[in-house]
Length: 321
Image 1 (cartoon, one colour):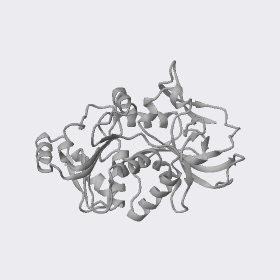
Image 2: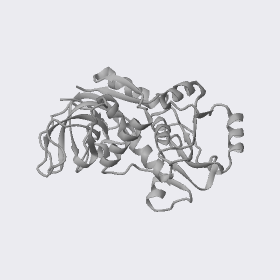
Image 3: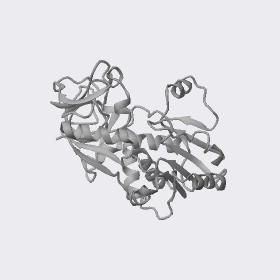
Image 4: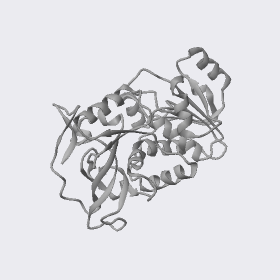
């Protein structure tokens, strides 16, 4: 089968090639014929030893085989979620993949495969972060990096959960794009390129936000908001960060949590959360923004170059079959 694979000594290079089609499934797994797959920054940040040979996590497709203990899915079901098997990542950028039954949900009939493929990592992370931040009716939410895949997901989910005030930080050239994705007239946007405006914004919004969702700090660029925005949290507010260096994650794993700061690593077994996400987006009348790419050597190369450039709007999705 065609697949995007990790090559080189440690598997840091992403290439287009072929892999044997998976034939075996464990008792609690499904064999999926992949329709669409999306990519995230984590896909090029982890080596083969962690991520496996085939690249990708986000997936949508049709069930071709079920394990002996599977009761909630059957052959022919259309599903979406994450290409994680019972023993670890299996990779979604391939014509077929094997997934744990706990990592996918049945796809609503009116949700296209390509949109469903974009809802894995970014929207699961966003929903978990909104819940860590106790976002609900009447909340005030600040989303940093609002035009990226995780940022758009965060703004959309904040709206769907009933937030009363939503503010996004992104480049001014992306303002119209973000407003279009959210469909929320009261959305406030701040241009991070304007240092004076950013200072005024921080000064004017001290103790104003229930949740600050930071998708930028700790990513591949030099942005770091982890200290400068803390004054904008309410007394019981939460700053939620989803990217970080090794030191950040070691501190997190050791339980050395800074008060009102949380690092979120998307939880496993996300079926119920995936179902909730699909329902929330339908309720809010929003959908992911897609950059559709062909699944060939040129398409894979272009997709990852866009992702590494950190100027992509929304989600990069490949048409696999």
